[in-house]
Every structure is written in structure tokens, then in C-alpha cells.
Amino acid sequence: MQDLFDNNDMTGLAEAIKSGDVSAKEVLEFSLDRLDERNPAVNAVISERREEARNEVSNGLPEGPLHGVPFVIKDLGLDVAGLPSTNGSRLFADAVAEKDSTLVERYREAGLVVIGKTNTPEFGKNASTEPALFGPTRNPYALDRSPGGSSGGTAVAVAVGIVPGGHASDGGGSIRIPASACGLVGLKPSRGRTPTAPARTLFSSPMSVHHALTRSVRDTALLLDLSAGPTVGDPYVILAPRRPYIEEVGADPGRLRIGLSNVRPDGTPVDPECAAVTTSVAGLLEELGHDVTEGAPNFPLDALTAGLSVLMGIPMTIEVDERLETLNRAIRDDDLEPMARMIYDRAKSESATNVVKALQELERAAQVIGAFFVDRDLLLTPTMARPAAPLGLLDTANPMSIWEHSAGYSGLTSPFNSSGQPAISLPMGHDSAGVPIGVQLVGAFGREDLLIQVASQLETARPWSIAPVWPPVPQ
Image (cartoon, rainbow, N blue to C red):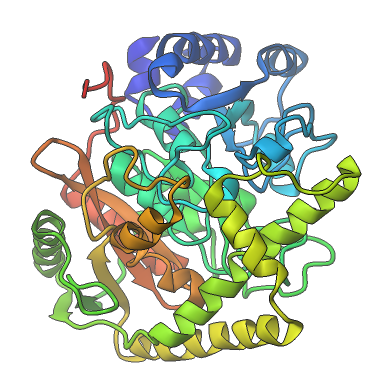
């Protein structure tokens, strides 16, 4: 059973269940045993639904393409009926969801078995997963290093082999950063590709989008097929793909024009270890027949700053105020961590004019950044400008430390949340300590298909290990 669970991705495990090699019940019990064995060392899963999952398997799961595969949901932005929805915040510690979010319903329809929710920084406002409510999640490649954020809990649950894949979300790099730090595949879809309902998020959430962290490109593609598409009342509907994303795996993308950049948007060079991995991948892409030349978008830093500084705080502030209204009390000093409290206080003073202007700045950023992709098909960069951070460096109790250091971890990812473009992180190397380093490929708006094609090429040409990391590497 261990070999079957560890040597297969989600697709392979589902095929084994369908063929009768193993039962969904056996797979679930193995996953729960793994949770008992491995979670205490890394603190990835923070709420569980063992008996509910067992009952679902016993009563018969939907015969979807991922029938019987264990799965986790990030504790931010999605509700799972009966489980807390804390957003990583002490203010929401006892908030329990009454029904599933739309995306969770779609996961269940695919046959997935949700076993719990995973750790996240407070409201996702950090590139590391170290909330005061639950404590830090640890990177199994080095226990004193961060797994990234804000989907660090899901990344580690997958990396140590508790589950073969899990839900994640990305508002500034929160899928791609943990994918890079933990050696996984992490695709941020285009704005509007996956639903947020019933959450109300500033007209289809201008910054954040939901998807997953997986071991393989085909799992990422299949999960996107299963989860993408509008719901009733969505304010905008993105153009549907020309065919299922799973059909893009192994498809020939043709000869592409790919830009290569090893500098941050402000022109600062990235860490040499990150640059070396990215340059190596550029060479591999050339061997695969693509044209790779140095170049990057003209990042409008003023528009990006304006959009981020306002719109990353407004949705959170609305959510906090609604929670306080439910509790029928005013905010208290210990409700929010210092970083979130600073964002909250600033957002409370924003005018309606500034909010509209910030939305307009997002449009301007998309126009300027998107122009690069008229003459280029893809952009290749490191996912992070530095290797995975030591725990404690990105400390939300010290907002100035976040401002000082965060650009090294999210500076290459967040511009594409502003522009709404799809981007994927792939596990293509390691630093000198053996901690993974990812590379990022960015496509034009709506071109997840092209990203999946090229990611599949790279996966075939230079396969990465999908085996869990265990035991974790001590500090």
C-alpha cells in the first residue's frame, strides 16, 4: 500500500482504485494513518473530518474521475460543512461552516474525499505560513525553513505524503511560492477561471484565484477541468478553453517565443542559485525547440503598488467587520495579528474614490504587462527571487520585517495577480541545502492551455520525483 500511495499521483491512485487494486476505504485509512504519523512534525493540517470521510466512503462516493482520492482544503476562502473556517485568524477561531463552497462541491462530485483543512497565515497576508492561531508549518526539506505561503499547509500535506494533492489559492503568489519551496506543481489560473461562490470578492476577486498543489502536471490539468467554470451570478465569465485541459498534457505547443528574466520587477538581480536553475531550464527549453531570449515586461510599479496597497486590504476588512457584527462587539487588540491590524486600520480610512482608482490601476497594469505577450508566448522567471525563507523572517508580528523582505519571495509572482494572467511554478532544481527551487512560466490571459503543454514538455524531459519527503530534514 505504501508504494502504491507514494509512487502515484492523484490520477494514478484513482486508476488503482477503479481497477480494484485497492479500495477507497483502504486508501482513506492509509491517508489518515499518515496524518497521525507525519502531521505532528510539520503542522500542515489544522482541522480534520475523519468520521465524516469514512461515512462518505462507506455510503458510496460519486463515480468521478478522482473517485476515492484523499484531498485537503486550505483554510482560507473555501468552506467545508462542519469544519472551522478560521482564515488563520484568532477572530474566526470558532467560526464553523454550515455548507460547502461551490468549489468544494465540485471536488466532491469528482469523487475526492476531503479529510481536513490546512494551515494558512492570517487572511493569507504572508509569503510564509506562520499564523499565531496555529503556529508555523515547517518545510520537510528543512524544518527551520518556511514552506512558503499562503498555501503552505496544503503544500506540506502533499510534500510529506498525507495526500497526493490539495486545494490552494493565490492572491500574490500563494500557490506558486509554496510549490517552489516544497517541490510541487502549482498553477495559478487566469482571473475568473475558477469560482469563489458563495464568497463575495470585489467582482470576481481581482487579485486571488483558487486552484491546487499537485505532484504532476496531469493532476493540475485534470483538477482544472473538474473545477473551472462560472456559477450563477458570477459578475464576469472568462472564455472557456477550446478543449479539456487534460488533453493539453503531452500536446505539442509548437515553437514558442519565450522571454527569460532573472531580475525582479524593480531590476534587482535574483539570488544566484535561483538564477542558475532558471537559466538551466531556459537551456532545456531551447533544446526542446523553443526560442528563448532575455526580456521581461515593463512592470508599471506605480500601478502595481497602488492596486496592491488598497485592494489586498479591502476584502479582508469587510470580512472582519462582518464577523464583528455577528459577534456584536467592537474589535479588540488581540483579534488580529499586528500585520493584519495595520492593513485593517489603513483600509478603514480608504475612500471610495481610492478603491475605484485602485481597480483602474489594476486595469492599467494588465494593459502594460500584457503588451509583452503580444510578441512573446511565455515568460520564464524564478518563482522566488530567493531560496525558501528561514522561519521567523517573514514575521507578521513585525510588519516592517514583512515590508523589508517580502519582495524577495513574492515580487516575481504578485504582478500576475494584478494582471490576472495564468502562471505556473515547476520543481526544477534545489538550493545548496537541498531545498527545492521552482521556476515560473507566465502566459497571456486565458492561456492555461499553453502553460500545461510546456510544463508537460519539461516534466517529460527532466522528470522530478513525486515521492514524499520523509523523514523531514532537521534544522
